[in-house]
Image 1 (cartoon, rainbow over the protein chains, first blue to last red):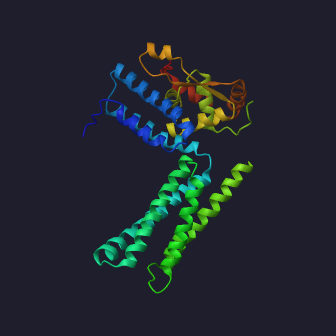
Image 2: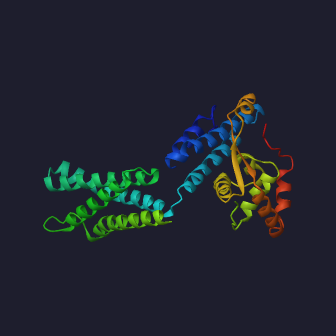
Image 3: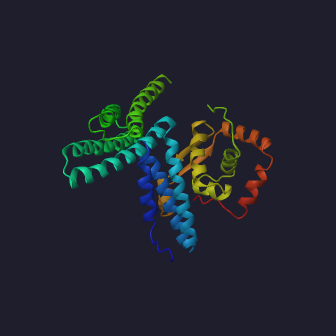
Length: 196
Length: 109
C-alpha cells in the first residue's frame, strides 16, 4: 500500500509522545530541536520534489532514533531499570487481579476475591503511576514509591495467607519481593545521587 | 573546559563532520551515515564534555528560508584538539568522511 502522508504531522506527533519520557526542564528545548529538524527536512524534500515513500520511510527511521536520544536524558540507569520493572510488575499484577475480579468478584459474586482483586488492580495502577513519576521526576515520587511498595507487600503477603490463599508462592516473590526491592533500590539511588 | 573522554569512532566521525561545517543533527547523519539514535546522544555527550557547543540559529535567517530555527553545533578548541588526536588514531576517519561527503552539501542557510 502506498504511503500517503501529506504533512509532517505524524512525525511531530511521535516526537511529542516520545518527549514525555524526558524530564520536564529539558523537554521543550528537546522537542523544539527535533520538530525543527523534521519540518526543515520535510520542506526541503518538498522543494526538491523528493517527497516519496522512500524519503518518508527514511524520516520515520530518523524519528525512531529520538527514542534513544530521549533515553539518554535519563541519566540514571537505575531509575530506568526501576521504571521497566515497575511496568512489568504492573502488567503481571494487573493481569492476575483483573482475571480474579471478573471471575471471582463479578461472575461468582464473592466478596473476598472481589476486594483482593480490586486491591490488586489499584496496586497495578500505582506501579504504573510511580513508573511515570520516576521518569518525569514528579516531586511526589518518594511518597508514591513508598505507598506502592508498602501496599504491594501487604497485598501479596495477605494473598498467600490461609484460609483463602488467593495467591501462590511465585506471586508472593514477584509482588512482595519486588515491592521491597523497589523501596530499597529507590532509596539507595536517591542517597547516591544526593552525595555525588 | 573540555574533559578528556574516550572517543569512539562514531564520536570522532561526528567531530569530523562538525569540522567540515555540517552542523545540524540531520546533516551529520547524512554525511556520517550514522543513525539518529547514535548521532543525537553522541552530540549531547560531546557537548557535555565541552568538545562541542550548541546554539539556536538566528530566527530571521530561518524565517527568510520559511522554516523553523534549528539548533546547530560547533566544535570548541578542545574538540579540535581531540579530533586531531583521533584522526591519528583512526586512520580511516578522514577518508570515510570525504567519501560520504562527496556531493552532500551542508543544508545551512
